[in-house]
Image (spheres, rainbow, N blue to C red):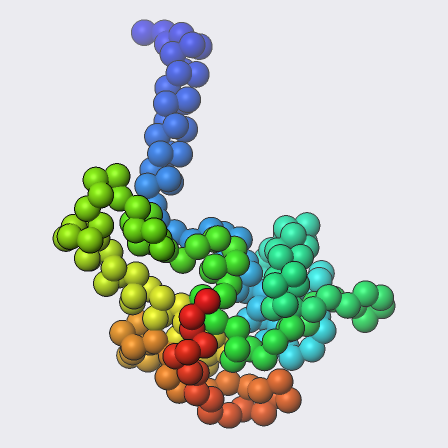
Length: 197
């Protein structure tokens, strides 16, 4: 039985569309967000102005893409850029003051898990205030925001235990450890008031 070229192309097209649909079904952060976190943790670990080529190689990020992400991070004040022979990127703020919340919001454009959780509580059924699904999403949202607010670039360098990660998911930031802008390791407290954007 001979299969026509058209049938083969159709089957290949169908399989590719199916893969695309499957990828769209997966809820995940953008690769750009992962790259942004990698850039920031690398800069925090190094504690110096790092050449862009070095960051790209160490974090396995295409240099052209790294420059685009770097521009967004710089515009937000999370990193600084330096020109010249000793140029590159450096942290723009202390690593303990850069929360995952800040990075995810910058790159993703939102930290909200579902449309009904936005400020206007939009719901196609006008049910956001009594919907049981909305209540469940609200709990998930609070835990998600607690986690994002409770984890800083400095804390990512700590090798946190699963228990510490779970505590941050349940309670958000409290006390952690990190390096100050002067490079000294110390305990710091994060105030709840600073979490409101």
